[in-house]
Length: 248
Image (cartoon, rainbow, N blue to C red):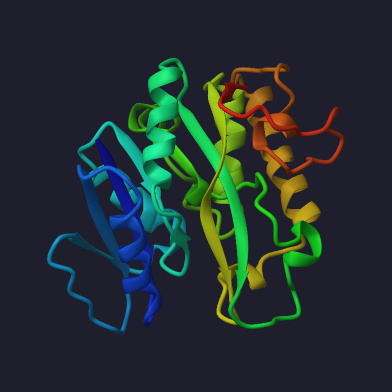
């Protein structure tokens, strides 16, 4: 039922741990697609499809995996993160109760492996929370086909950009109360190079405003902050709140 895409670039021991977490995430009918984005290291996982990307970056590598996926549901996991046991089954079950939804989102929690200066625990704490991360979501593949995948011109924030487009397109989204993703904090996290959160989010919202002026569908309900789950865009009205297992 689910195609899982894991892009990676020189992930070291993280990749095997991520793959192990996928295998315990629930459904037995998982198609595992690994996308090697110009790694110097070589990996061999007999039960996975291995694709090679010529250094396209995270968005391009994920798109390559998305286009190769054959199952109706699609999930993404970063090579240095983990899924909780049974997490994908929980997300898949939510779709059974909400067949109109295109995205199902669970919570995420941070796990500190190495202390770094830019510590997300200062913002979120260590408790599970809703936040923009593709690894905490399960998608109907037809939605990504409709939305056109991830914007490969973006090095950072491509996940937020995708969800902003989903909001404008009126794609239904459901949240579940279970924790799905373990986001692991270490000195090699790519997001440590990212711009400040508010700066990046403002740029993404302005990008979408330009799309709207160009004829992209407009939407006011639910609010964008509520839809994203835990990230308040500049100038947004209202606050994100939990609606476990309920459509947004």
